[in-house]
Length: 320
Image (cartoon, rainbow, N blue to C red; front, side, top):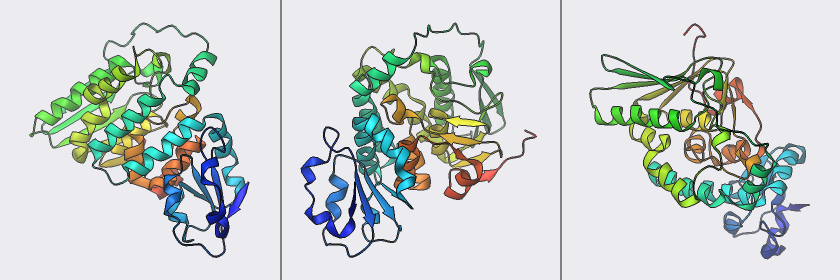
């Protein structure tokens, strides 16, 4: 059901939330009653349909041109209403926070959802996947030339999925850069056909508990280490840039990409939200509403759209 903007003052706010009606859709037309700021407090996504110039548009989590544009989003919200609620609340709360504080809020929200009913259902539906042996002698390559440090994700056969070994190596490289002021440039690359397909799915759900997982992200998470040196870091991306791959790239001061690059944030399908800096880096690059669109739709965003939105700063030659 879509509510006309002029009628929002008459709705029963108490029926909107993950256990009742998990979203509110508003037609952004007509006269707007005063005092619509309470829309940002609803415990569910607020979907606007119409023009971004409408007075209520700024209070919405997503603004779409037509009802058809939110069909897939509504389906994802219905499948994971608690994760959807948590996502928009996180985006709202962190919009103006300092980066490291915003990352901490994101991690807390992610921890809240880990092991929740929606995430458990996704984990249970996946066939058992044994942890593969580490076949990479070096999950990350590190090279220094004068004042430049190059970090290359090197899990070629796994499409640079970020497992524990790669996560630790990446954190060590970023920590080195943070300690050495003579390193004025940091460049991140990925070997093979893509930059990174995100977190290694076979390791999802293996943390001993949610609190420990949160503590690990705070002390040994690439996003927190990257935040300290982001202003001198360039991400060189190509091919699939999914989940944590897209999130870490978005935190960098400069993102250069080949024409075959695409972004995707599929976490809502796992009953989760982005947990590697996406609600911070992506939202600050393209705005809270477009970030929510990417995260709730889980759709791919190709090179041209990503460049127009601001996920990509510059095109990189494929000759690298």
